[in-house]
Length: 441
Image (cartoon, rainbow, N blue to C red; front, side):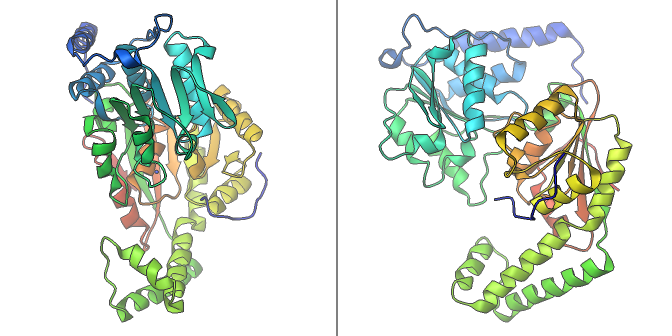
């Protein structure tokens, strides 16, 4: 059970009734893949002894995704929700092209997950799949490497015919975008649940990897029963009188600075404040006031009571609770006796908690941003977003934690503090979810 820790910041239905229809669609998709010819790539061909063969049957939309990508000459980004099997699309590409392949991933956890998935699902021996990162430097004809390792100045990455970039929204960053040039692969596949970036650089993916080749929303896959049917519910809580008074005072200080300096919200609103804060103490004070107000709204004491009510309501369900900041993670863990995982959690303890959650020793878990991506999180059927940023990517990632196929309906709760800016942030982060019930309480 987690112990109290110091508060720190944490540094994203329509039912198909006939089984034979599914079979027909899968057969059509497979045939389309076979008919989609690409230029010969003998210079990058895998040796005859290394012939990857997919050991699982792809779902309909996964076959459709690879067909769409092949029709773009083997370039582009596939956008699928977290938990919808983007990895399988990549494995299909490796099998189809049979060329030397480099898979780039953002974290050490994904490094080992990808290698294990390639070995298991493509019928290869472990020694046939290279791994670079986390102290390991084994290069093979099929190799998995971290972004940081691939971006090292002296790292040579030539000779690969297929480049696969997982969590491709990271690629346009200054430190990573040169990876594509270093690899020089003729075929490029990006994978992401939400490729959009707040800085607008997601548009660069069109030239780095290719345009979006295939895109499915969670509602699309839930409607066709490929992922769990789900519902989203908003629950509103109030600040205490003391919290509300402090919040209003801090926001008044922030707004007064904006009005005095005639700063209006716009595309570079935050950047303008940061530049001013470099030389203007009043700007720094305004930014601090805004941050403190946001902390009050996101970490309202009433949210802990709301979480407690939901835990009692879903006593028999598997629940993951998400918070933007560790101060609320620690408070929920301490007061409600729920295991917690943050970036401070030791690797061994993290593995034990996730294994316990997977095996049923724990049915509740509270976490910060550390489990948003890059970690194989056991499935749950209820998610509670106690607080979150305005980023759509984060929302999709958290929703994905409850979307693996299951016989029961999954539920995602958002807790929002009334009379604060949190409501607007919640609206901005929500993706289009047409066809999915949304309830405000």
